Length: 259
Image (cartoon, rainbow, N blue to C red):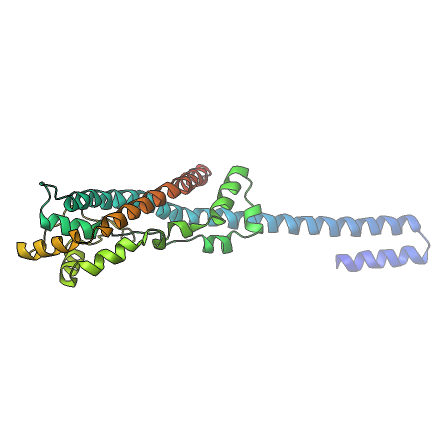
């Protein structure tokens, strides 16, 4: 009705050659279209920003999962390193290390724990426009860094060294299975996706079984060098985790501060 009224008035003004009225009506039309477009754009931007805020809220549990992994990985590899120290003493015939402790520690030192998450889904969600909708420059920068980070250096492959394979070639399968069953990876309370490794382990095998396996391990001094290399890989793994952990904690703090 309104556009029809304007067209009628414009037609009347043209027939009477009232150019001032024509100009006024055209200005009204142009201004109306401009305002309508601006309002539509504003509403769209408002909806996109709201959607971005919702996505940031939904991202917080994933960031906490990452932080939980960092914390549990440090504890996990602290445990495997303690087993490695005991294993080294076993190879050196340390008087305080029994054959059972030596065999179990040599195996447990080879246990690994990697990051089972990646940022691929974040990249899909916060691609392009969504990322630009974040007005906090530092938050946008932190999220961009996390999205483009190479998580491959926190994968199991980084610490899956030859020692892990070689030690399993020597220790009999039934003892390996008993270690995995009795003293293998366990999720911490309330964190089913994370892992912890028990710090102690006792198995029900005759002493002569452990004596024979310990002798077989000592007959392969190359395993000592393999374990040294494995421990170096673990140390590098934990060092590579530090900057990513710092970025993740800072990002979560900034998102939580927006509430």
